[in-house]
Structures are given as C-alpha cells and as structure tokens.
Length: 295
Image (cartoon, rainbow, N blue to C red):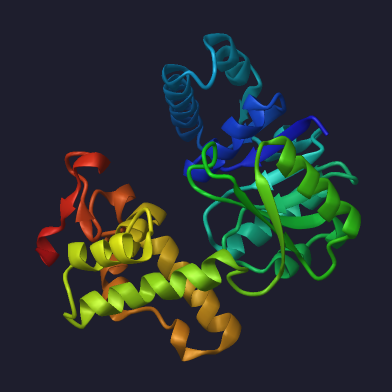
C-alpha cells in the first residue's frame, strides 16, 4: 500500500498529505479548487521548513516529501489507481455521502475508503457504497504532522482485515492508533466537546472571564491549552457541528450547544480561521488577546 489519495486540501487535508508523503508514500492531493491546492502545497512547504530548522528532517527529506505529492482537481483521475483514500472534506454529512458515492464508483474495488470525520457515523457513510467492509474512520488530530493519535473507527460493516491494515499503516506513519467503535463523537469528541461546551456556558453565565476559565484548566487540570482557546483552534463552527451530531445521535439535551456558541458562529466569529473567536488573532496566534466582546 504505497499510493494514497487525500480529498480536501484544508488544514487537515494538507497535514495528512504532508505526513504520508514524509513517510515515503505517493500522495494524490485532491481539491476542486486549484487555488486551495496551491495554498496547501505552500503550507506544507513552510511546515517542512520548520522541521528543517528544528533539525528533525534534512533539506533532502523536504524535497523528497514535496516530490511525493501530486495535486488534482478531478476526483476520478486522482483516485483511479490508489490503494487508500482519506477523505478530509468539510464536516458536512451530505457532502461526505456525495464524495463516498463517487469514490465507490471511481476507486479500485479493493481500495480502502477512509474518512477523517471527527463525529459523523462511519456506518452511515459506508451505507452509500458497495464496499462497507472497506470503509473506516481515520480521525487524525491537528496538527497532523505533530500529533500522535489516530482514532481508527470501525463502522458496523468494517472488516477485521481493513481495521488491521489501517492500524498497521498508522503505525508506519509514527502514529499511535486507537481502535474505537462507531458511536456519535467516537471517544475524543464525545468527551472533549461537552467540556468545551461547558466552558462556553461558564463564560455565558458570567461565572468567569475567558482568560480566567482557560487559566483554571491549564494550571489546575494540566491542560496544555484552555478549552476556549482550543475551541478557537478547532473552529467554533466545527465545534457547533459536532455538538449537533452528538445531540441528534444520542437525543440527550446535555449535548445541546450553548446559545453563545451558536450566536458567535452565526456572526462569523469562528476562531483562528476567521481572526476572532474568544480571542482576537489580528497580531497572530502567538500574540492573541481576549476578544473585545469578552474583555
């Protein structure tokens, strides 16, 4: 298994492509937007430069990694001869179902189809294909080249063989794969998102301010980043989408998103990606300050 396709060239997609390519895999990075593909390659190159500066890779490694990546705007051409497809498109059910129907038609019959979804049912995604045994979740963490965890999610029909292949493949990427079953939010987001939502409620109810809430969790609970800043990094729109998947999937009001989160997303304040969420990122991530709304 040496030929990989990655669907989507955003933050997760370019990180997944970077990681596979760095470990010697041939990667077809696919996006309908040619400009997005150009930005992705530029981002990968800059991230490789950081690795060179830190001494974790050489200039030759950087060149080899970039040479392992080809970009495509046509899905059918991009997936025609690959052994594994990793879908990393927007966290939208209808879009993912459309993509997997097309993947089932265009990819080789024995190709494994994986989704990087952070919450959407692998079983539901697999249901639109004729190869449910070869559909699986590979939930990478951001930033992909750095974070070790991969949640490997078994859908209802995912075979043992497919699971074993993906577990071993993840290890070849230097990752620590963890096998989980297909229930809303899997493990990571089933636990993380209610915590983030509760932190937002704590702000919403004026219990404490943004920095105070994050400081308590960093210093008191040994979290490397506070939950509000983490939400900004994930994307508040993504947090909202995952909470709605949890709420719909379990039918439990404890997963209902905080009204403050809903209003912020509606207003376009989505965190780092939009320049403002609970913090303002006008001067960059490292110089973030509490957003004026909350200061």
